[in-house]
Length: 605
Ligand code: M6R
Image (tube, rainbow, N blue to C red):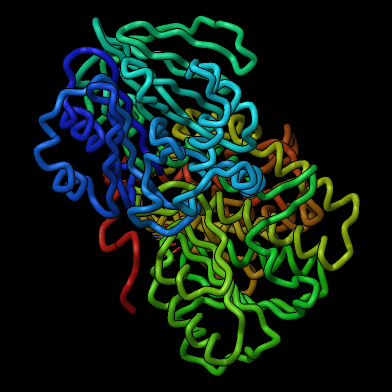
């Protein structure tokens, strides 16, 4: 996830800005850069790679004093990770410099318009349009120019801007991406989170969406996009830097689960137009011609693939197969030039998934991928790649990226439906529910304490049986994987209908069942399975929907999420299974961020 810092006032040196930027390294990045104003001149340095490479580039300039400065760590979304695309970006006059976190949805239209007016672009980024827009709107007042520029932006942004005609000023604005201001005695600071500012101040203002701030010395004025002045409360926060990296949470895993609403927004941003799904990455592909899809993935990504299979089968006539990549690559798959192969991989580097797409390509298949890492090998070897835009996931267990995968796959499924000409009211309802999902997620995340109590009750069991049907089975698969990989409890996942074909023999009071039982079309079937489990004296935790008295009576513990369309239960239930696994691991004294024997990216067989 990109990181921003900004400095104005006091006697800061360039190295102070760079040192602060280093405190954002934990967010992950592929390039870094700085713009600062000294003696009325704008200086810009940027470099692909680590901040230490930026330091080398700056050399003795590190000791220079500055009036104001902004710096950035970039996690590529638009344009490859290279020097040219690294932030800050400048306008044609070389007076404006800008750093940006987020995605500008209408950048193509704006770029065409600005090029028509004679602006010359130097990068492939969406960000650069903002610098040129500010130049276009500038009439001597930087704040006014930024106000006018951001009114023309669609999408998400957190920005920091400097202008060489205004050496003692930094202008900041946010919509959809976080931005915090730090207040000192004769200076003010700006950053994506409080971590890099804690060594200078404990006083912070958290900007709200639609805020624009003018920072000058220790004076901070805040306005809304329409120009109206507003006051925001100053909060005192006395965290350590390492607590701040984790947003005050004990582990990255829980921080990343709690980032679910923002993850959903980032996954959906720019992929809907006028209330209809429209994924720009798919423009090159004639989806209406697709008759067969082959999906390859591993682990959690495989579970997202199973969801996609159910969705595509239910809503289209497309023939779809889903394969665990380590199996696919050693078989004789029926893949040809009429098959679209979809690889799902958070890291974009998983060896088995990579070899599977290479095999599919040799067989003539076109390759599409969904990954979270721009420039990863799978992305580079794909014909079309869709980015998750989740920002780096630091906990080894996939959490927010699973959420992003499910959201993007829902959009992809809906786009297939649209292109196949079978769009209906049902699909509109799915899309409407998906759009509401960030808000519904807040509701589910507020169950955190209840889930911790549940984890306290069940943490000492040695086994768990996760069951579900249809979309509920997807949640069972992922729930069992999450529990086993971080808490080391043996957890099985079965389609509930399979229980009586063998696994039910395992059940007894020491082998609890985690049942995924939404009030969907298979509810009554699930109820019968629960009665069977109870007959074996198994304890049951039921993950259901609404205020279901029947389930409460039938089971030992009931946890409920809001009702949505059946297709979206894997998504809305994801935080529950993730939080349950997280709390069990934490209560057992394990580090959920670094589970034993596991790596974040599995680049070997
Ligand atoms: O990077 P990928 O999505 O390709 O990784 C696939 C699996 O290795 C990954 O999902 C793994 O199962 C995680 N430990 C899940 O939490």
